[in-house]
Structure formats: structure tokens, C-alpha cells
Image 1 (cartoon, rainbow, N blue to C red):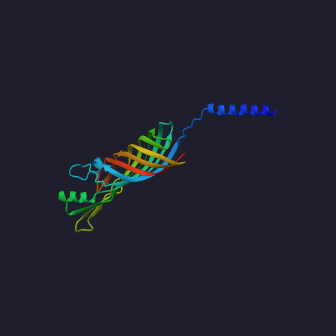
Image 2 (image 1 turned 90 degrees about the vertical axis):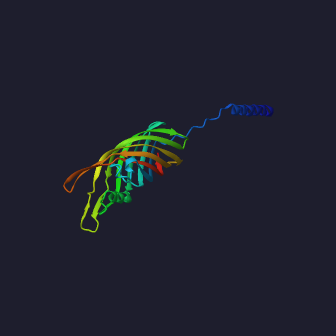
Image 3 (image 1 turned 45 degrees about the vertical axis):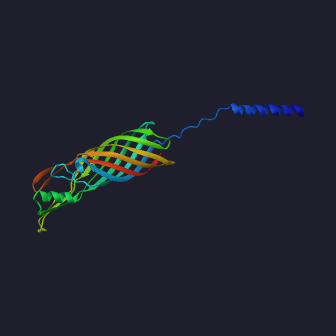
Length: 238
């Protein structure tokens, strides 16, 4: 009996080793990427085209806009691995080039008039489709085309006759509702569970029109506003 038990134990051990060798390893499964992201980013806003032009004599569309800043709240939902929808809440502000205003007044023979201007600014809500390129389980590039509603503010400009402090005029504070569109891309790096680093590069465009009556005269001002934004930030993923 003792000899028989040893024989069966030996056979059982041999069979177990053979089964272990023949068994196929379990395939590793890729980590399921999150479906939703919400990120806040901030960075420079670079005026381009007519909006950035400083030569009022050459173009009536010259916006005299200096380098500004942009704040963005980004969101997106991944419908599939390569397609989704995205939306932004954005805000930008740009100081005007005071030197360009002074040069224009001097060159136009209005050297006796001083003028000061504050800023351009706008905010908006836009949305649209996005195509996603997964680089790895943690890194994704999104390519976006969006459009939507924006509200733009023209600069308040004050005029004063040199030497006569009481002889001054000021344009009214005016906002305009306008359609805005944006093309761009962003990179998401999911560095931790439910957290990501976010980098965004895009081009914004809108052409607001302001209508007002100034000293009894009906005036209309239109401005082409083209801006390149580069922002970085952090977000959550779900």
C-alpha cells in the first residue's frame, strides 16, 4: 500500500506540472480610458490679422490689440475611441496699443487731441465634434471644430482737447452678441486616476458689430477678431 501511494503521488505531481506548462498565459487587457473630462486652462492670447494691426492709416480694420490672456473651461465626452463631442467656456482680454493711437493722431494733424483707450474683451460658449487620437493608454490628442455664442466688448475711448480739461468726450460702454467659431487641438495626459494634465492650442474668430449714437450721429463699428490661444491646465476625468 505504501508503495502504491508513492506511485499515485508521483503520477499526480507529474500531471500537475504538465498541465501548468501547457496552460496559456492570461492576456493582459488594456486599461479602459475615461469617457468624460473637465479641465481648466489659462495662457496667452495672441491677436493676429486685422485685430493685431497697429497701422490705422493702412487699414480701417486695425484693432491695435496687444498680447492678451485667455481663460478656458474645457469639457468633452468620448462617444467612441476615436470620436466625441466637446465644449468650451472661454474668456479673453486685450489691452490696446496706446502708442499707435498717439502716432495716428499726430500723423493726421490732430496733435492737439489726446485719446486713451482701455481694452477689448469677450466671452463665449461654444461646442462641436472632436476626433481623438489615442497615443497610449494615458495620452490622447483631440482635434476640434466648434462654434457658438459670444459676447464682445469694444474699448471705451476718451478724447480730450490738449490744454482744455473740460473739453472731453468718451465713447459709451458697448457689448455685441456675435457668432464665434474655433479650430484647434488639445493634448490630455491622464497622469493619475481621475486626473489629467491639459494643453490646448486653437484659433478663434468672430466679427462683432456695435451700433450706437454718438453726439447725435448714428455710428456702426465692426471689428474682425482673430486670436491664437495657447493654454495649459489641469482637469478631472471620469
